[in-house]
Image 1 (cartoon, helix red, strand yellow):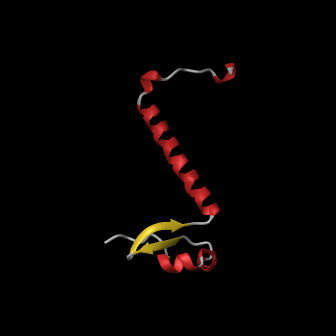
Image 2: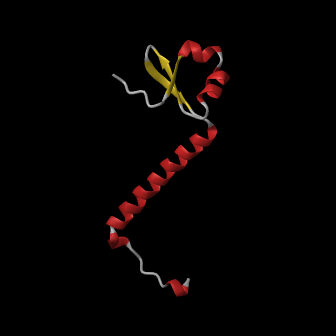
Image 3: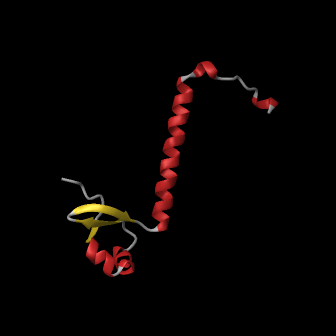
Length: 83
């Protein structure tokens, strides 16, 4: 069984009838749009989408940092006063 990762869920036909009303009634919460009782997609407001995208970018950056810290053989010593 698939988990629904939102407090608000609507059927596809209900969503198609009036997407703006669904968004308004969700009151800034994510909405799972269901097709045959399974999540077809999630609808989120732009502000939340921006936060999610920033979080993904931060996680990618942390992965790079950790990988580079693990390979200290390529490290270059720098004098901060010389910068």
